[in-house]
Amino acid sequence: MAYEVARSAAAAVVRPSDEPWRDDLVTALAATTLVLGLFLDGWNHINLQNGALGGFFTVWHGLLYAGFGATATWVLTRNPHIYLRGERPAPHLQSLAGVPLRYPWAIAGIAIATFGLVGDAIWHTALGEEEGVARVIGPFHLFLFAGAGLLIAGPLRSAWHAPLYYPAKASWRTILPPLISLTLLAALIAFMFQWLSAFVDWQPSLAIDRVPPALAANEDVEGTVEFAGVARLFVTNLVLLAPLLMLLRRWRPPFGSATFMFTGVALLMSALTEFDLGGAVLAAAVGGLAADALITRLRPSPSNVPAYRIVAGVTPLVLWSGYFLALRVFHDIAWPFDLWLGSVAVMSVTGLALSFFAIPPSVSEEAWAEEEESG
Image (cartoon, rainbow, N blue to C red; front, side, top):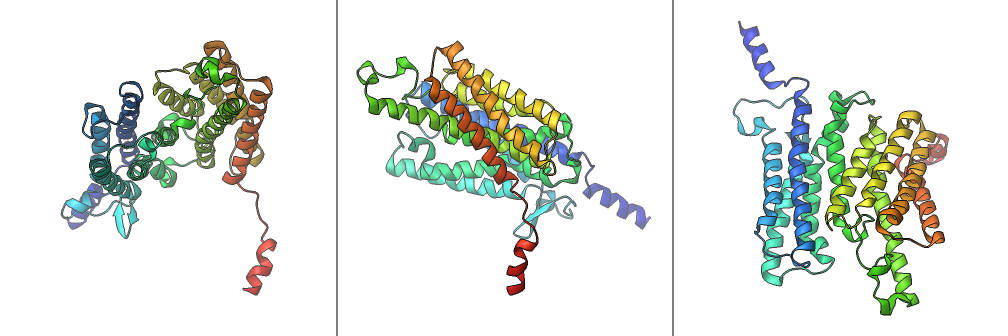
């Protein structure tokens, strides 16, 4: 009898093998509402308020606050041992400062974001609203982004370590929670650097009709426009490729994963300015499809480094060649031939270089032998 009671108690504490996956999926979906709220608020500031932040508590902040509240509540309630007497921590929990938690860094993110929220309210009351680039990267906004990033990353971190997500070859069902989480993180970073996004056509622009006629012939203005254009490609290239290369270090994702991530980020960013460069979203999808085809064919992994490098170098070639074609066909924007050709080449080299940071060349044990002996 005592044995049966003990076994029943253990069964109540140890969750079924698929329950962590359900936790991660619900966390990812709740975080999706948070990010959608962020982009809805960004769209409002850009299109309806001429860049002004508006009041702190507005209807446009509603989905953002609701998404944060829902995600935070769900994350906190994944730890019943904290608030229910007699509950013991489940075996898959990890610790933060010695406390076993389901999503340790996500809970840290809640604290950081709450600090940023309170600080931002005080800042607006004392110093007024930020303007220009500072309206996104103001001091307390950085706390908000950091906290939100840790919260959003909960499913990704869980999947990275949990035995449930082994082996490395993943099905769509298995990969969905961490893939959503990673896509949301990429979108959050893209939002932070929205003035350097290739999917948003800010001024100055290489679109002829966006340069005032009086300045169009000014070489300094032309140079600044070209600097900004190439910088947008560079940052966007990093924002898209870095998460993909990270994903490939842990899983061999199913076909469509890269397309899902690239297209999701591009759609959200382009929506900020009501799809002013909507054709570029199609280029992102084509780049994602190229990456998916390469991943399926070459099977890149930390143990298949040449294939990993090929994916990193070839994907930008397809992505940005398609991008310039989309600009020309859908938006009548034509970069100078040498500029766009050189830009595509630079993005490819950048992707290849990024792969060396993700998987650096191996170092032989002999290289450290003398240092260890002398130490």
